[in-house]
Image (cartoon, rainbow, N blue to C red; front, side, top):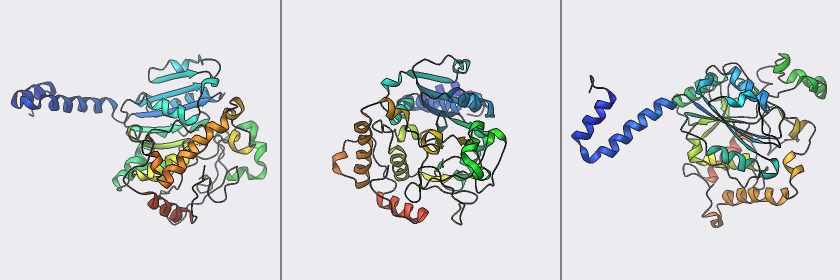
Length: 351
């Protein structure tokens, strides 16, 4: 078929084997679709009354090597619809609802997944972040490097600390240990890896993890999924839907377990890509606004935690549960993996 165009190839094949006309059409349509979405990134960005949403989006686009390859979906849960010019971008999908209508962070992430349109990659973020220059190229290259190495990459960790200028005094003499990209202050490469050990010494603030001997090349296994920084294949959105029952607690444990059993390899990035602001949920231990604004939060929060217990114990009660485990690895495999990477046994009651 060397001298034929794609349309001529299609007609030739359909005439040659007419009983396969539908398959031929589907094949060429898929080729065209793959061409159109090649190397694109679907970015999930839920926000709840966050004043840092616009700066986050602007920095996301500014620091990307090719912003035309992004499809950013923002779910803005705020009293007033945001009118900033950045939301006029053709490759940005803007969703809005009043905060009183929200059903939680899992519900928001799940809703965003409905707007996935077969992009090559998937990036999950929060609405209070900053980015390294060329973050998109860096993530794609890391993904490809791991893929060549035989892994099914699920690049994730608790991103280095983002410290706003007016908050420097909160960190006293500890500042040199942490990244402050706004002030162009860098800690050591090892100190800047932030790993919150929820099942060991997590103190409600933050915990550092040095890179140990269990590296994968320049990478190392990540025993926990962070949904403020997760980069993987775009098809993740078809394979694993975020559980809308997760109002706030337990969603990262849920995705960690399910991604692992679906065959994804959880791996921390080998270089800095994004920075996350932890103030609301760590430094001052301020309650999340979802709790403040919803008097039914305890009941709502318990649903996701119950689901976690059921899938961990593989109870038959969840036979019709749509947000369950994969069949590539078992829960026992997950427990062993967690012990190998942390030295601790995990608990069913983790949130």
